Image (cartoon, rainbow, N blue to C red):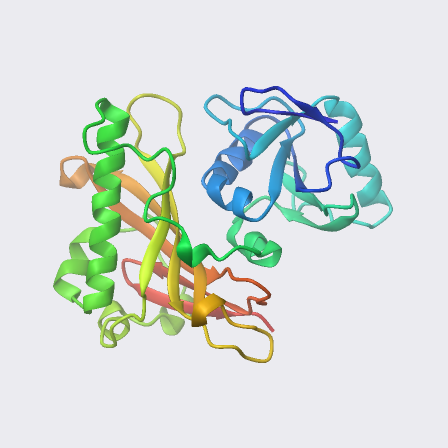
Length: 304
């Protein structure tokens, strides 16, 4: 059983709730809290993928909503997940300290498992049934232009950089794109450097993005002075049918776009982009590739 963390405190059972998949996050202490905060960045996407995230321990501060729930009997959930691993129904996490996930389908069957790292590939696997291209530009709950407070102001600043990114991408404007990025702390490997296409090449052909909708901002750290934000949105593009892709409604396809923003101390506290990634997120579509971008350019990652 689990209890929803949306204020209703409704208690549900896995085998009885057949309208939602259950993504169970298993871990301890800081590892579990960190995984749940990463999952919170995708709060809108769990809803559009008919999935509820279940924490096997108490939720960290600020993590709540219609997308997430707490296990009623944490020890029983952990015993269940341990039993699944012992019987090789699921795979163990790469390290004992890392948080992991187990996915139960709508009928209660195990659909997969893995480490609780990036969730975009998992969401692409879950897919969607609705026509996401018809969603409004901003997700519900986004602060209005007249909202007050430090968090609301930070949200508007993040959205401004987000919108400037797409303007530069669609126009192919390198001069507008360059100042939006923050230099990463970690150096790239030689292999990554060889595979990456610089922004000059990426922007030489204007992006075929028809619209960007359902933009959602989540600050990943609790408190009134946020310094990191995750923005997810739906990129609408042409979606022609192919062998493993039936194409989107009205000839439009959709991609899940995820961006991470940090406050840049070297630019008087301005919000800057750290990363941008996209992956197919459309009805009856198998995602074989994803795009990963930093301030240096983009890499197209393909799955065999």
